[in-house]
Length: 638
Image (cartoon, rainbow, N blue to C red; front, side, top):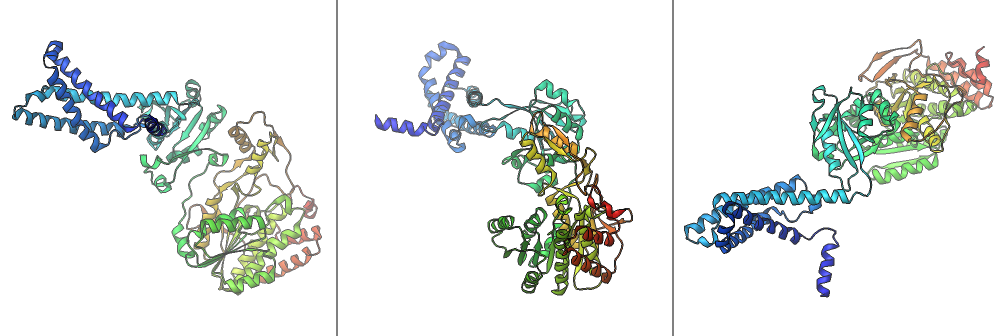
């Protein structure tokens, strides 16, 4: 008795019926199907007279059915997880068994063993049709009952944005999830011909329909966006606003096969490991996909020695990751921030253990240390991302902006020429254009210096890249808003008119790498940042996405040196096309290296006196278009 109990506990501890239960159930279905078929065709009296022959024949057919079930393993599936594939296996197995039964019946008739041939050929076929339907029905009923009785949480009612374009794959995926989370209530399609059609039993709506009305009518709680419709969704502000206003969650389907997304060739297999991610405000900002020739980048960097300054920052750390992919011979990673630099050390050991990388904690303005690094490392390529970048921090500390941004850049640039670096790529900012603050002016002086240095020698090619805000960078407005919303508000916006350009960090870094690869030296590459975004609209969207209630937006006034809008060119600059539609070459004024070098040496000497007014006055002398805004240095512009 104990042995029987142990066996039962072992079987049912798996939380599914043991395979022999399904095997017996299917056998019983075939037996009953045979008996019912004979009775329906011949009535009760005939069945009574031939009861033994009928029973023997039915049992024989059950035994023969085992052959098909064994070959197709129909009894090994977990019934509550039955799928279309399982149902087809049953059909194939029963078809094979029917053929064998017919053959056996003919053979037995030939030898005159009539006792085992009570069924006619028609009855055999009907028997297995009935048996197949009943076996299907049993699996479907068990699956349905399990799904209904094992959902502890109510299902989220959803629409899928994108019908034919990946939407069906998402629909099938969510319908097979265990436990079930979503209840599909329709599709949103861009194809006008699909309007009012039915897909998988659900209605197809057009993107131009009143989606708010559909949401209210169907009590929609979330919209799942197909990977192939992400760009369309990002650029459809009307749909976004309707969903956010209705309090509907927006989920993006994330999965690994990025190449298939780009080629528009998603198959059902691509959705096997699909993850649904609730969107952030970064996902909703309008932008178009930026395609970059990374093959050229790889050809340039593979097997080379690469030095990156500011390697622990938002841009620098992403450049580290993107460059490491191409297996440079060695990497020298420099930053003065100890803890973030330690994070880079751990990341390199974990993700790129095969890369010979040296992580250094130091300041780029330490000449002796930089000289030692360049003389021993001898880099082929330098990517210069190190800089103090926060406008409110640099405004009261102009001497530090000069020493780190300008003097540090001069040190790295001069050493690049001295030690034969092939290419020096500097990351600049749109705040360098018509600067209104110390930080922006310091970066413009860096641009002027490396461009003039490029024109005086043939050893190193100096390339500058200029772009605006990157989403999620350290100190950017989005992390600040998230923290303020988390704390219940208020969300602080400096001015309701203020606008900014935004770009994803990986996209910005790819453009930097391509510009650095294809630049010939002396260029200032300007990135097309897309459409500007009003910061107050950004704040409203983040509050709506968070689901937080009664979060106030507070206007605090422009900070020192802050602009209402950023520019990538000043009024005297034009652009010309480059190798990439998203990259333009700025036509800027050329400077004499000797004069620039003399002015910078004087600026550095003044900054060491820590006299803010004198330091900024010299900066304005070097960059005449620098006009302070909302700052104590406005006095110098009079």
